[in-house]
Length: 479
Image 1 (spheres, rainbow, N blue to C red):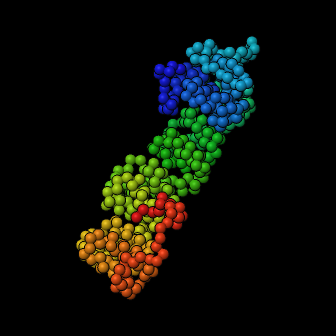
Image 2: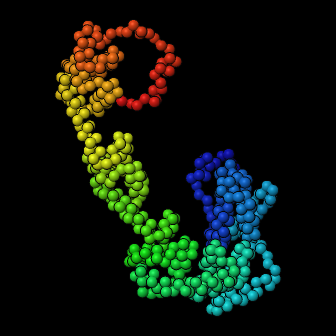
Image 3: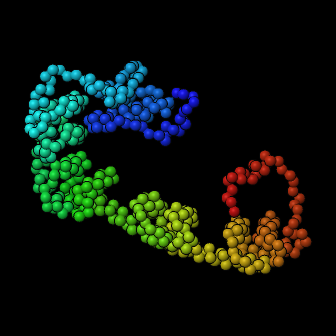
């Protein structure tokens, strides 16, 4: 690499990995998922941007795969000509450009696929199968170790359903899906095809549930078998969900919903209905919260997942959240993130219901009335501030002084500059002298110098002693 020009250290993380279109169209469709994963990650490593992964073992650990799987993948790509293995111990690989791979190097015994070629070509009476297409089939059969007859049967089934326009990629994708279902012999394939044909009546009922009059096409039959055989849904559940898709997306919507229910492990109508009802209520509550805040809800599902659902899981009632939303509107809070701060405040105070929030706000209002009296006792007519509330909380909650004692201390500061500070100083002095009642306060205030008295044990302390006695300032709550 030139020392004159170089990428930054983060270039690789923010850049991209170029994949040739020929790889995508010719090699990717028939390769196993793990093989593609290894190839693409190796292509990324060829850029030299991640020097920490410098061995096959490191790649295997990063991809959460066994080392043998990585070695098997590169062995597969070696046979395609896309890579050259220059060393097996340790494994070293050179990537060849897809356009210069020079074709396949996998060799088969002469006459190995003669019967297969004839049977496959017979399925396409109106066009000739190209040598490249045949190679895709050969490689799939060899890699998956399945009999030729299985692929012929699957090809015949696909062509019978979709016509001669179906290509090798579609057929091998279907074959891979069947193999993943455990279908590896012609007998098993014949049984699967028989089952699919027997499902015709059930599929007609499904089409009716979706509001369709025509017969299902080939892909729709495949989807139906996937729902039943691969995902484990019963006909009752499929028809139940289909009813909600009538004139609302059809088969595509049905497939999307069943995919979601499968990932959520919801397999009965009761489970699905309960989930759907909870989701409906959650979406409604999310929209109502936005409306109360004077906002437009563009994506209720995302907002519900990030904010509203966690709030409910913490124990908040629906009406409590709506009340908080009302308060946010009055205060000018315009985001759910801003509302989240108020929600956390109410959680800390233990206010999870609308009634509890009302009680909390009423207590805050009552306290403000007392603080206003304290301010008035100092001779001021100003309004209550947050600083006043914080000071009063210290005097009443932390130091334990009653309202009558605080009001008396305020009267002693009447007309003085920085009156609230004077009130605090007086109360602090009384706290040190263990003054707790109004009578004790009056008696102490009548003593000359009572509020500035020095104690006999006053002395100086070292930094180490003060740190030990007073603790870390970072642990203190700000007032």
